[in-house]
Length: 282
Figure 1 (cartoon, rainbow, N blue to C red):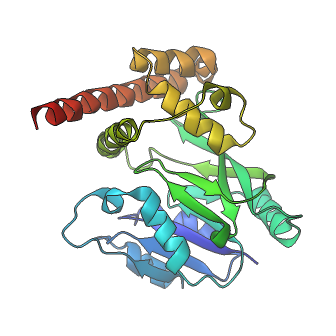
Figure 2: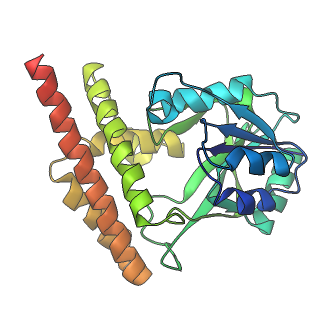
């Protein structure tokens, strides 16, 4: 069997359907960031194990460091099984994915982690083309992985990564457009902080690795670092998603999503400039 880890913060709307999709596991863990709604009551109702991490006076998401927050959960939660599948409350495991992860955990053949394909839905449409990438590492041996980055963190495995079939369905707009915009407004602050931090450390990256690294997460890391150095990033982001990734094939949903992502990128640009200006003044 496999342990399930679900990260939550005020997820009373989405959590029940998420829990229903993983009811096959007898070791479900909720890793909560001090929810104030009925999230924890729902978790207990479903018989899930609950871990709440309090950040004290810090009001920032994930205590200001999502990578450190997720890694803390992997190191401190007592999972029943050696394999863990991690997901958010607005995601659902499909039956085919469930069978695939069970098979992978039973016969890992030396792998320490496995990637899955996620389907994002918006305006009733599967965003099949406009997604930056649909592949994410979600099944792993917790002692063999850790997370990095302040926000939109990446999982870094210490060993070989395989892949499984089936889809993880994602509904990022389930709480409405205002919630998505508010969340990404906050995320843009952390992204700007990450850029400033990378530059302070020298911000090393490799164009070769950005284009040809075999490991997806290593390749994505270097691609992001390269992307942060490009001028006109919001426009480039839109053209990359809508034209390069053929987001136009996703219809109205694809156009709207590409525009939203370019706006998010502009938030990051503006906040990076602001942080740089503050550094000069200080």
